[in-house]
Amino acid sequence: MRLATALFACGFLCQGQTPKEVRAAAKQGPGALPLMQQYLTNPDVYVRLEAVKGIVEIGSAHSLNLLIQAAGDNDPDVQIRAADGLVNFYLPGYVRTGMSAPLRRLGTSVKSRFTDTNDEVIDPYIKVRADVARAVSKMVATGASMESRAHAARAAGILRLRVALPDLEAALHSKDTNLIYESLVALQKIGDKSAGASVRFLLRDMNERVQVEAIALTGLLDHKSALPDLVRVLGSSRKEKVRRATLTAIAMLPDAGSRQLYGQYLVDKDEHLRGAAAEGFARLRNSADVPALQKALDQEGKLTARLSLAFALVMDGQIRLGEASPLRYLVNSLNSVSYRGEAAAFLVEAAHSAAVRDVLYGPLQEGTKDERIQLTRILALTGDKDSAARLEQVSRDSDAQVATEGLRALRNLKARL
Image (cartoon, rainbow, N blue to C red; front, side):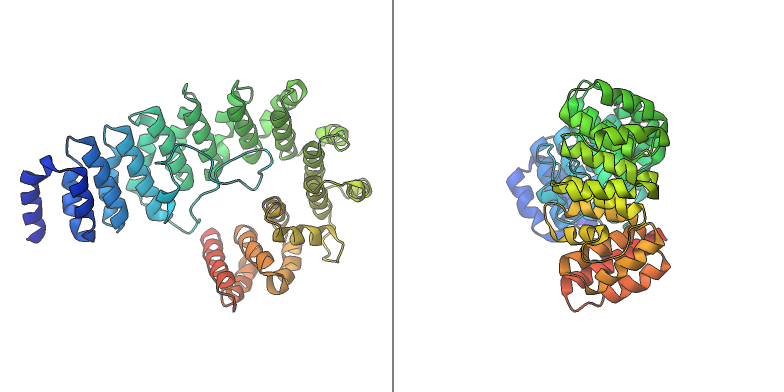
């Protein structure tokens, strides 16, 4: 009865509402949602904007329906705020750094040396409502402006919305650089290998940022049929970032025919190209390469290339955890703010091997705080049923932060198994 009364009263009053009054109403909490819903139909865009902000601040599950409604607004700023709010519901705190600010990179991916991809993404165990996914996907395709479509693409990636794949792939053919770029980032986060073919035409894009992201995504999505295209790009480009991204992508698509190419760049003057070449050898998994790789590691002075060489030796079977072993070097690097992202990426790949996981259980229990936190995340992505028992122990750790990460990792592991 009170809800009906509020809606009736608002029908007379809301049309003349000011943004200041909307902000005041939002402070009433969930009880103000009926008013906020009426404000969403106000002809004044500033009132609608304040209504969306208020709905986001209220933040209850009942807010989702209103944010979906706002996502269909004809004003791009209202749409952007709505997308912000939808993401914020599943990733609390996002509105403080999210899409209502200018599009910008907010972090670095685990392959940070060749892409500046935003690394915000919800945990795998979090399930997004189907109607939320449809609303965001629709905004990618038909948003009121290119900017709101680009923001929606970012939201689709953060929320891992597979339903948005067709719209994201279609957006790659737009003329707007930001929309193309954000769609590439989203496709990386969703990680569906079927999308690899849709990216191929961008490998020679004139915009360097788009080209680098497309190249990186081609490797990450394991699109092997694009390998000849990548080799041609590597041979023809003179752009440093493009060459680094291209050889790294080639290294993600292991092929015995690339061995000579890896050997050529293992002695290159550019440390990033040397590292990418080492990663190529790593994925060939040929123990006959160990002497040459060990020699290269012994002579290498740059940390980025050393990490790649250590990874190659681990992939070739050097998995003991001795003081100077390559696996120990990777684990130790988890303590470095500057290099833990790269080390973690390599350990994720290596830890798909049960033998490597068995060795990593040692530092998971006895390592430094940073090592234990990072290893819980790695095992969430690579572990099996045996790993669940280990993470269960971590979830009861005496250090509250380690225990929280252990519980989070356990939930993600169980969602994957």
